[in-house]
Length: 315
Ligand SMILES: NC(=O)c1ccc[n+]([C@@H]2O[C@H](COP(=O)([O-])OP(=O)(O)OC[C@H]3O[C@@H](n4cnc5c(N)ncnc54)[C@H](OP(=O)(O)O)[C@@H]3O)[C@@H](O)[C@H]2O)c1
Image 1 (tube, rainbow, N blue to C red):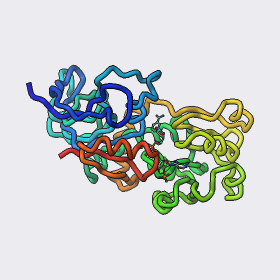
Image 2: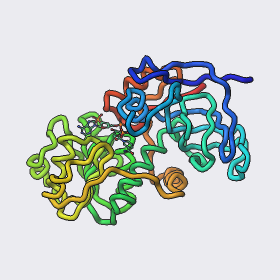
Image 3: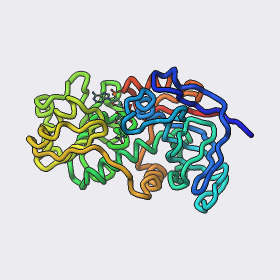
Image 4: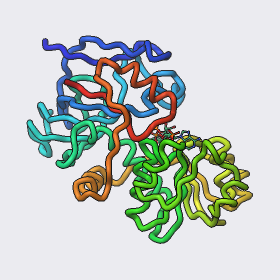
């Protein structure tokens, strides 16, 4: 039996719970493919699940392999799979964890990798871009000409939300720290607010002429999300990636609030890949770590700061 290297978690806790181990190479079952992994996107949900913060919603059986975002090459196909063949370059989501040299995943969870970018860049896309897509176009029902406020505009989701909102014909305002202001502007935001020098309060937003906002994409939550409600027009929406403000408060402002919800449209990843290859969507990787430095990657992700998606790269 051949073995591979995989990162496994044996119990809820800190980054030390991430252990690089030899495990049997998985076999694709009905409807699955075997993927040789080239790069893995590190999402905040990966450390939140590892830390046990989501045990009520996503209880884990130990040991488990973390991770959702992945890019690699098809190495084998399971029974009934006709959509993929060995050697194709793909990206998408791992349905059984992605922190491994080889994974099996549902054939339907992958799309052809954009041809103009690296595997590391491709692995930085799936959760971030699909969450942004759902929040803007499905839950947010964004229309061209509307005004969108993206809270946390430099992150793995926010950077896509800014660009996709622009692509959808919206005007975009973003919030970021000083080091990321120029970056968010370069993505197309008309106005970028430095939350480190201008704390996001209703008064501060009004003073900056941020008003009559149609849609807020909230990747920050808490007091920041609550403050944003004050500048949304009556009948507008706030789509939260973390926790929507209390319903009573939303009602007082006449704003519809909800958590971003899945699933995305069937061809979402394919459309995103096309936009990347057409040069309409830029992919930003955060720091790229070698696979063996997975603990360092989680420590950085836990800070909640940075630009683009952190990536683990395999040899
Ligand atoms: N519900 C879902 O389906 C779903 C899906 C994806 C993500 N999420 C959640 O959404 C959140 C964002 O995800 P992500 O992947 O974009 O995270 P990320 O890549 O870690 O980025 C977080 C970003 O937030 C910015 N930030 C931190 N504090 C801020 C503040 N007070 N105001 C404005 N910006 C601030 C950081 O920018 P600076 O460096 O400039 O501070 C950083 O760029 C996470 O909590 C994640 O778990 C939920």
